[in-house]
Length: 451
Image 1 (spheres, rainbow, N blue to C red):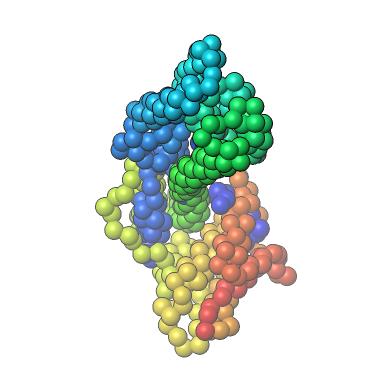
Image 2 (tube, one colour):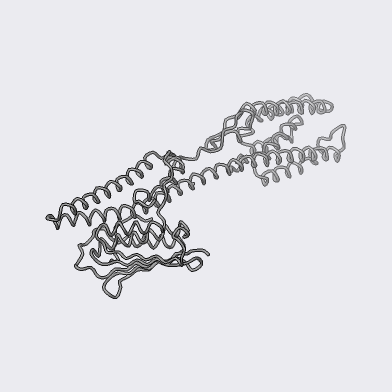
């Protein structure tokens, strides 16, 4: 056995709207695990996002709209709220007009009313430019008593749609302008102190209410973002699981097909170099070739069928090979003409007591070693020793002497032992290989066997 082996694969917006013993049974369990995964296209589809609400027209456009890349259109609820805000601002303006009419001229009243109406009409664009609207209405409020309701609505909109730093600046500037305003235009029913306190309470209430609404919207959007992220991560995990399953299938198919094809090669070579062999030997060799080819094709059809279907199948899970199948494996190699000496020492325990994962890994190591021996050292005797006990681990030793003649080069070799090392490391063990002193090759592996 040389170091060459049969080729094998390796395994929130700023505005607050912000996954058996025979060769033909050895890939069965892997196929069943692959079928248990989501369909092939499921992991590659774009996440569909959170479920659309049943009544989006009852929600704000910032929350109901699921495509924030474009400007959200007003929902029915938005139109109703905007209409109520407009009517509320008008009502406050009418109340202010009653107070204004007691000591102002007709011209002042007319200018005040026009500015108040314009301020109320400007509220229909409050969602598009909340900061600019609040600054403009704050300036208008210095000359219009009837624009007080529109100013409060603009402050509420600014608080809902913009971070608190904007609200703090605009709200502070508004409160600073209140005392001078009432000094120049005193209220007939309240003192300057009383009027200033009343306005401060109103402004504080509006800003607090807006902060509560903004916090609720951010909570809803954060939950939606978490749901979308969780769905994307689940899709990635499903895709990763599918990739791992396919890599495992590739390793299993390498182990199975390399074993079968090496048997085909040995018997086909015997028929080629001994055309005058007795008919019983020719018949036996032809039978082995036929059986091995049939079993290899069965494995290929099974795997390709699953990969094409991409959905759960009805085939039951087939058993994976364990340490108990080593005897049958060596018998197959002997039937192909190999001289294999197998010895298993488990301190008096039957092979079934070895953990399934450890036994399967040991089986694959022996299988690959025998396959390499047939390809790279045909005719050389092979010794296989498997020994261990719980708590000490399981040791696998395979060695062969130098081949009788120079073996023919095998194209594409060099990856089988790398795959065995990876398999042993994944099982928590180790594997070493290299030339032996007698010109042959030696492979030693240790696998954990818990007590």
